[in-house]
Length: 129
Image (tube, rainbow, N blue to C red; front, side, top):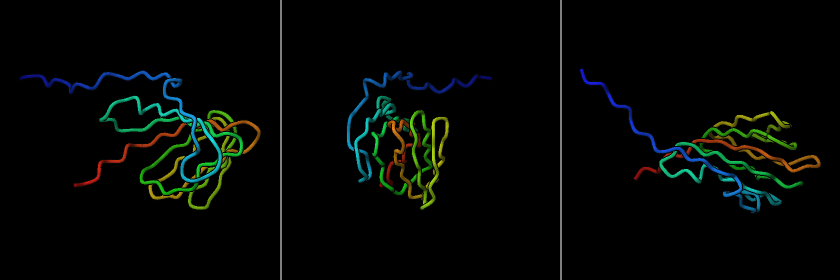
């Protein structure tokens, strides 16, 4: 009986965040500036997930926006307030917010130091043609 050969996976991608660092306004029409680290953008398609870090400057906020997939915000430094469908929760280092497909979400920096968070979510499937 012939043995099945495992599928060949693409080679791994190792990313130094300093090579994907971009200084920019926060997304989704809110206020302030941030530093974005689009880590998974360095992995060629096809990939199934996005993995990013964003550091919100003091006073910055990602505006409320609907999401079309589950998302996780994981705080690594600073303090923030996350909102999902009008419900707010405080976040600090070591805390995560699991946000669900269809919710309207956003997050704002609070406190005296920038808010650093990891954002992870699946890649949206391509639109049907």
